[in-house]
Length: 461
Image 1 (cartoon, rainbow, N blue to C red):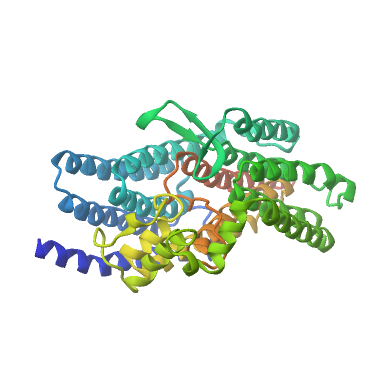
Image 2: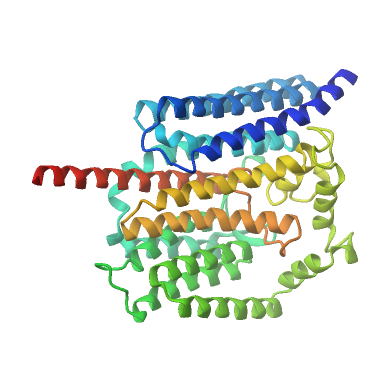
């Protein structure tokens, strides 16, 4: 056992090493997003895959060695192999469909997913098993669905997007059940086999599709201010529903994303400031009306005042992050299970505790690279609908990461959202990966469009 402890302590530096190498390789793709991978770039994607493979191998090796139950050892081994199969199949499908340029971005989300799954295996094997399945399903949807249903990715369907969004966002009022304080869950089945999902996760995609359609400029002309009324009222209606369902984090994500799309579509600082002002007033009213909002603000301002009560969750997260330093306690040697709701809301604190704060900073850098990669794709887009759609997707991911990481480290009040690709949650995993697939579709569509325009010009000549 002493040798195993020594191996775990040494593995902390190995995990940080994998993270540094992976970040360096991934960052090189941001400066020049490739339309087609060169031989050198293909080698870099293989290095990404190597990092994922050996990170997975090292993590599962420690987990299996620590486990005394033989059945759980077998389960861990199966899950480790299953995830690598999923990663390998994803790369293979992208290559045979001649979409190898998408591999760098998919490798980033798979590395993030691998970090989350290994931490889930450490905390709850059953949840980790489900997470792998959700990850595989999400990749299946992302790789194929946008292209199979591309006829519906069109600004002409804005009314359909709005209606579908309303149907989903209103469903919890009729069939919803409360979970973690929010009444926005739909549960199917009962007991351990119960399956729950959040309709609001699916509404995220419908929201950006609708706003990208409704706020579309025509022939380069600015839309009249009256044209913004219905889209903004629709978005406000979605947000109000989330607030009434006590999903404050989701409401804030919807608000900030809608405001960003509005600003880019209108190029009006006045509308942006009005949005900020109305959001501030709504937050003040929410603080007055809802007791759980006041509890979260009080826990944020001074969690040490009531360590065993209101501040317990955030205090435990701060202890986890601050106790073991830059390289962490080592996988399986910390106490992340002491943090309430650790597998979803506070998984970032668990990662920092056992993998180290350097590793946690690396996770944040991976999200930053992912967002910059998406922005770099948008710079080449000259179609307003696709531009707003891609912008909405990037904002949804970036804002969600900021809200949950900021809440866990006590930078802002906790909002209780998941960390994309990492936290446990089936609907979150499905929608997050699907959004990446939609973003890649936007890039591919623009390339095809650019190619067809170039060909038509050649014919004219």
